[in-house]
Length: 125
Image 1 (cartoon, rainbow, N blue to C red):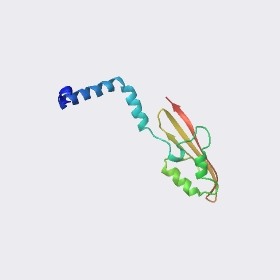
Image 2 (cartoon, rainbow, N blue to C red):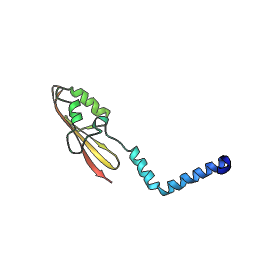
Image 3 (cartoon, rainbow, N blue to C red):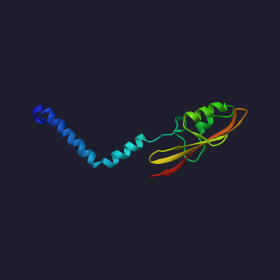
Image 4 (cartoon, one colour):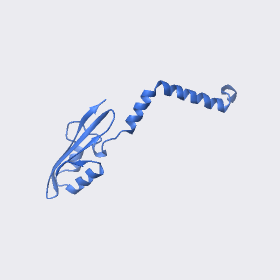
């Protein structure tokens, strides 16, 4: 087989040129795919949330009776900025779309009575 393909050095050189040729043709696609792969993503709990509707997974996790301290810890761990006493938001710099997640809740004496997380579009390519 080495007679057909030539020396290992020639084979390596041929493979390198083939890879460079493919990269030259598809450079825009490669750059875009790399950017998408390295962009921010939503917190795991909100991964499947639909745009513009309260997320049921969030409402289940922070349902009435849940501890407000647990919610505040989750918000902090996931990079949210508090917007006063019962709201928070986070901008996700993603591709192809940026998103904003708005969280609101009501708590009485540290116990959540209602909560909501809504993901919305904040600009797409």
